[in-house]
Amino acid sequence: MNSKINKRVLEEAQYMLKTKDTIRAISKKFSVSKSTVHKDLQERLPEINSKLYREVADILQYHMNIRHIRGGESTKRKYEKCDTKQV
Image 1 (tube, rainbow, N blue to C red):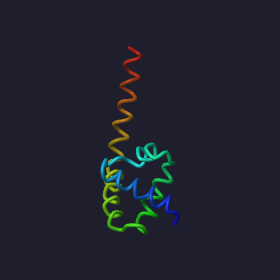
Image 2 (cartoon, rainbow, N blue to C red):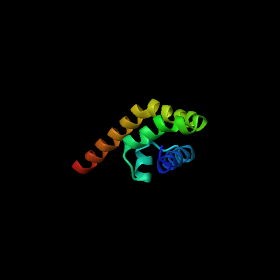
Image 3 (cartoon, one colour):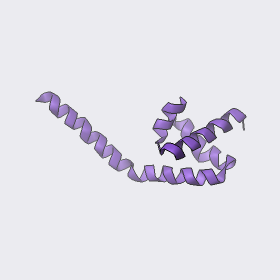
Image 4 (cartoon, rainbow, N blue to C red):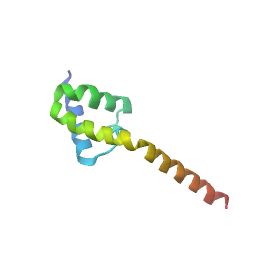
């Protein structure tokens, strides 16, 4: 694997451990697509550093477990914003 890719994968993983950010936030930070971040953390990271992967996988699983809550909160804010404009 390319050393540039390895470096990016490790930086993304360290950043996720430090900030607990979502894949979307990490993709913006590193200026790559969400698909690239996902592939980096799910497929490439285990080959590079399995211990780091297990730590990152826990955070990814947490985000998967609460995504329905975040979506509901986002929708609620959207409609509250619309209601205040109509009044």
